[in-house]
Length: 512
Ligand SMILES: Cc1cc2nc3c(=O)[nH]c(=O)nc-3n(C[C@H](O)[C@H](O)[C@H](O)COP(=O)(O)O)c2cc1C
Ligand code: SF4
Image (cartoon, rainbow, N blue to C red; front, top):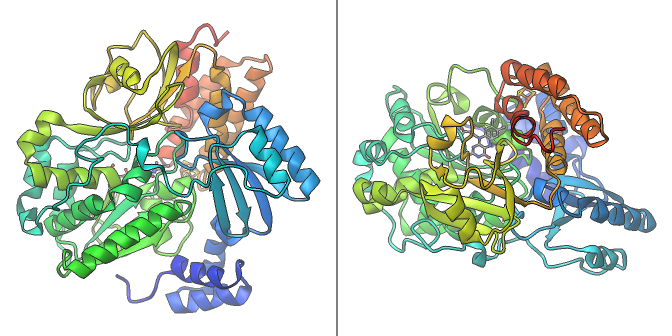
């Protein structure tokens, strides 16, 4: 690691002392991190938790809730907040789609999260009581199936097996489960091939995309498996240091990941590897691999131009493997079980929410037909599935009942399992309300670095709002979608129009 302490943890320490940052805190942190004060100011102004002031009541906005009683809950919340003299609003996805609706009570940089919350809960909040069950930790029971990833492996893989990891991961056919599905063996080999005395492994635990919560579950309930995968990967590529980047809002996950790190460190598991956990910046864009590296380095989380890719020039310019939490857990399993038996079963985690009787995290064999996945979760009268997450597409159901949930079959149709979210909507739901949530999310999370995205995502949201008011402009939406896809610098802007486009193209009955 760079010789200086890192800026964000220094700012967080100052926040712990007095719940807000004073100018002197920012300048002290800049000095300790060896960064210009102007850069530290710019950074502190970019991440929401460094500007949080006072009490705010925030309803968690996600596509499934928007298609239900979101408007009713939000207006009750706003009314109660006016009476109580506090601010109210919305915030995007906390990985609680399986237990929501969720409510965040923010007091400066501190947050308490409740789920599920109903109108009665909002009345209680107004009376000064707790509005529902505290949901800092995902209930363990949300893992609806047992399995290789969801059950503790007991014994962890021996790091001496790392020599064969790249070949095994290749032959197991593992792909990156952060959503891009890039072959993991090729990525490991690319980092290994770099000549550098310093290399890093960065675990991407930023998971902020509505509909996805499987990484949160792994970080809270099976973090040892992820650390083991990261340690094997570090050995395989020749890295000496692992940084585990956990989404800023996932406080329980951060604590569990750190506890697992300390336990493995004390047991000598990491041998001479250096390990640390890092609290993420608290924005969706922090999950984009190069933006994530920028935030570790103490800057605004803005994506870098690629190439060079992180495998060549990543953290502090050094070759870096950035891998998703679940991908690394799979690497540990491949080492434990062997590539052949792994390939035979090929487990994959799916975050299933919406109109199902048993929402939660499911471990299913890759290639499970969509209908079987939905039946396992107790879906009925399904009309549509938003697959992948907010950066996903709406599929018609039952027309796609036999679609295998694997890496390639959805792609042939222009879809993707992405990180593995399945948001289920029955025939009573308003899919345009769900699209309103998706487009609001992208408009809110655009980092502002490139103008096709910073101007195009709010415009797309406005077009969805107008559509809901009866003014349908499908051609304009298509054109704007094309501009976003072709002109945006990173995957956020590129993926922003996908859900809307799939609605227009596939749901003639709602696309008037
Ligand atoms: C806007 C945006 C957000 C992303 N968020 C995440 C995330 O939270 N977690 C993740 O693993 N990958 C995320 N990704 C993908 C990463 O850039 C990267 O592909 C991934 O971490 C690589 O790991 P993998 O090969 O194991 O999938 C995001 C990409 C974009 C464009
Ligand atoms: S596409 Fe959006 S999120 Fe990505 S760099 Fe451009 S403005 Fe930022």
